[in-house]
Length: 421
Image 1 (tube, one colour):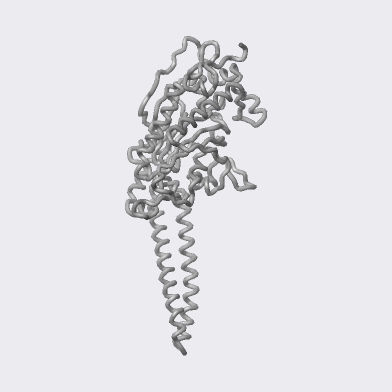
Image 2 (cartoon, helix red, strand yellow):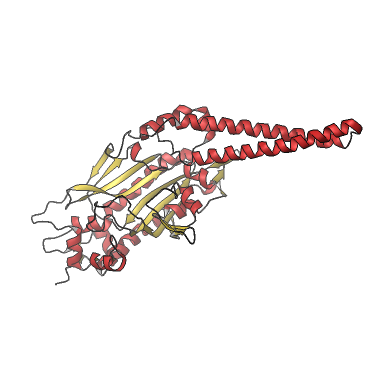
C-alpha cells in the first residue's frame, strides 16, 4: 500500500509511476479527492463529538429552559455525530479498498514499457556447443528415469509430474545446496506453511478476489501459496521489530502452487510451467533507505547459485509494465535453454520497499523512537525449473548428464546415467 502522506506531498511521483507501468494515472486524483473527503468527514465528526461532550458537561450545571435547550441540542448532536461517524467510516473503507488496487511506486531507473521492454544488464558464461543433436529436458528425463510426466497427468491431471530416482535426488540436492548457501550467508532457514489466510495473501500484494493464478479452499477460506514469499511476508505482521536486528533475512523452503490460468498452449511440454513445484526463497526485512543495496545483495546471491550449477545466464532489468503489484524494481536471471534456443527465467528478485509492510503492519522503531514501516525484499535461490536448464546444458551424446561439481556432494553422483545402462 502506498504512503498517503507521500502521495499528498508529491502526487506527480505516483502519476509518473502509473504512466511507466502503462496504468491510468487519473487514479491519483481519485485517491486525493477521496482522501480529502475522508479527512473532512473525520474533522466534522470530531468537531460534532467535541460539541457533544461540551454540552454533556453543561447540562448538569443548567436548569429550566436552558437545560431543556441543551438537552434538545444534545439529542440533535447524537444523531449528527452518528451520521458523521458513519460517513467517515464509509469513506475510510472506500479509500482503503481503492488503495489496495494501486500498485507500488516504481523505483527510479526501472525501464518503462511492457513485457518485451526489459534491459539486458549482463550475460554470463558460454552457451554450450554440441557435436550431436541435443535432447530437451523431457527426453533426457525419460532416458534417466528422472521425470514421469505421463503418470503425473494420470494421477493429478495436466501440468503435474513425478520426479523419481535421480530426478528426485537432483531436486533435493539443488534445494539443499541453496539452503546451505543461504545459511552461510546468515539467513534463518524456514519451512513455511503452504496454506495461508486471505489477509496474508492480500497483505503480500495478491488480489484474492481477482487473481486466477491462486488456488483457494473455500470451505476453510484458505489459499495455497504460489511462493513462500507470502508466509514470510506475513510472518512479522502486526509487529514492531528491533531496529538492531535489521536486516532480518529468512530462507523459506516450500512447495508452491499455481493454476497457470491463461497459459493454455504455452510451455505445455515438460516441467517449465506447472501447477506444483518446490522452491527456496530468500526474504529480507530492512530499513527502507537500505533496500536498494539489499536488493543488489539478493541478486548477487542468486548469481552465486547460478554459477555453482555452471549455467550460462543473463540478468535483465524488468520493465515497469511487467512488474507485479508489490514490486518497485525487479531483476530476473534467465538461463540458456538449448532446446529452445533462448533464455528462460530461473530466478527473480524484487524490492517491494515499504508497500507490503504497510498492508501487513510490519514496523520498527528508529532512533527517533517513532515506529516506521520496514522494506521487504524477496528473491528465488533455487526452484524445480532449474532442473530443465541443468539437464539440457550438461547433457552428453549418450543421454547422460554431468552433475555440476559444486552440486555433486548434495546429489551423491558425478554423472546421471540413462536407465538402459
